[in-house]
Picture 1 (tube, rainbow, N blue to C red):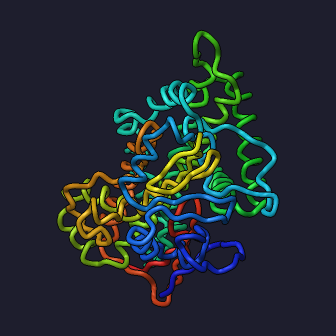
Picture 2 (tube, rainbow, N blue to C red):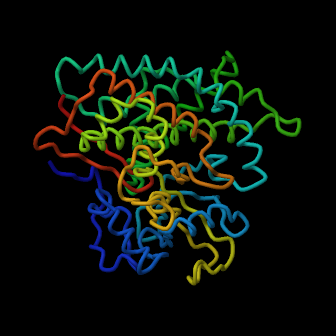
Picture 3 (cartoon, rainbow, N blue to C red):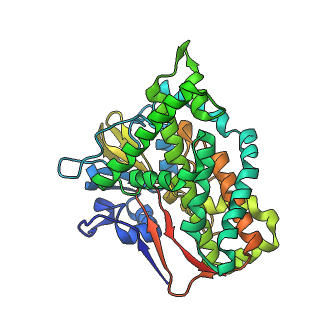
Length: 406
């Protein structure tokens, strides 16, 4: 068994993680935990000139503080990678993705448009479809005694749920997944990132045109009929919210489900406990989210600011390393262990502050149902002998290939 990285650019090795970290370093992508532990002790706010330059706090308190400080840290660009003249450029088409990349007041009213679609009541309505989908996926491979827990299962769930919310064909799931991977996982690759973003934009333009002629009961139709201050929501904003729902709703949850199944495949005691004590599932979901938080977001300093003694300049990026914060020993007992019945668990897997994930209710439900349906049919499983688990990193970290046998 070995862990590898699905894709990573060729860059010079890291000489000093405190002053030269690389979030796309292959070893870091596979297992970043020791790097975070060391930085918390020696340099809790690291700096790097790679990918346009950025600062990276690793302590819970510092990440939490920056996430809440909207006065000094803007969300106008939450991308982890910034491209300089020496780097390959980003795609030429730019589309806002509110509310995630908006500051107040735009953030406030765009988030208000989105939240009803991810309320507890709405998410409860999505659960039967999600459960049926998970069962159908298991049907497809259970007789073979083996599967790729990432590609055959985890990857297939969120994209189809999000397609239903957007009112777009579920049979395009593989196409949507490819676009999202191109945008997030291959952001350093000019050709792939351009292809993914252009694909999403072109597709959504057609969907907006279709909904004007034939409104339906879906998020895109509702956004087209909504008003703000007595005026229709601009098409750019409608497309941006829809694109965000697709991008953020697919890769993040897929990564979370995949990481959870990887953990259970490599920790049989935890698997047996969940099978024998299903009442632990709500706490277990929170713990798996804490331990394997997939998302890193960026903020941009509005002006010069002191960040725990570090001279952050206006325009500098700060990476909100939620995953590192969630393993801070000052906040979590035995932070590098997965404790399924952990009671005190104020993790930051969904962020913090005004930009806390609007889809957290949906993500929790999908993760819970995915694990429940898997364990109901496959109560014992492990990594296949000699399996190579492939991890993706950067904006979203999670397994992309995870061969298991049962």
